[in-house]
Length: 331
Image 1 (tube, one colour):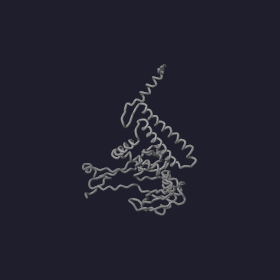
Image 2 (spheres, rainbow, N blue to C red):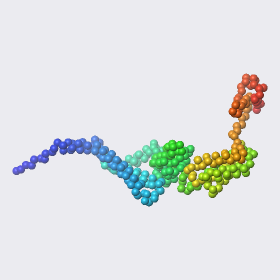
Image 3 (cartoon, rainbow, N blue to C red):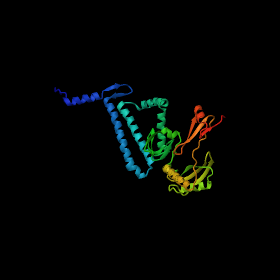
Image 4 (cartoon, rainbow, N blue to C red):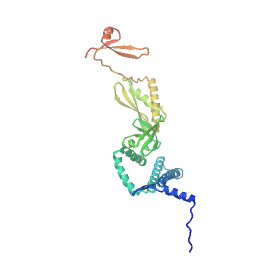
């Protein structure tokens, strides 16, 4: 009877088998999940592959497919971001299943518990994330729009899930949480329906000025700026008789809302030139001083600036009869 000898294994083959055995050996072996070095490497590899797939898929859509359909740049940005998130999330879930042997139903349970923690501790971050999705789909603001949020005005550079980046005229990047754009009002100078907007230039003139001459000068100032539209024509409104000036408003229509700060500056230059030409006086700020008791000294320096100085009792006795000292009785 012939006996078959067992196959001989080489040294290299046995080393490879041992390496694979130790890499696949679970250092965490629970009923819910199983973790080994090889499974962790698989998790990282799947996430990296998902990132690469997302990058090349977005490049294909941006350069080859979407330009054929003439998709709006704002909508194109939204679609590319959604594709990126979908691919990354799908890769992450598959990596968790492959690398940690986690059932996706258990992941749903974990996310349910996390949602409770989000509701208490991470509510602001969750609000920013949901607001980012609203901005991407509803699109009240798009990439390249000129917006004003509070005291910040500039061009929208980037809209991510949690924040929006605005570049100001000083080339400063301002990071605005998306919840600020959803919960609070803001001005979008580049909104599709805002092709022509009206700007208001407030102007004060001194009492005694000829209001007809003021109106003529303001209309001429508006027409002198090329960026101001001829139709509708610039108009002037006498707002009120204020203290200490008559308040006017110049109403001008423009078709470049994003450039309104420079247009306002150009109009103000023209107003100053025409007011000097027509001898229209812009009143200086005034301050009324009510002195209950004591003395004050009025003086004037070499540059014509007037100074007011309060005097104490001793100085009042020494300078009470000097020129320039004014006494007010007790009230």
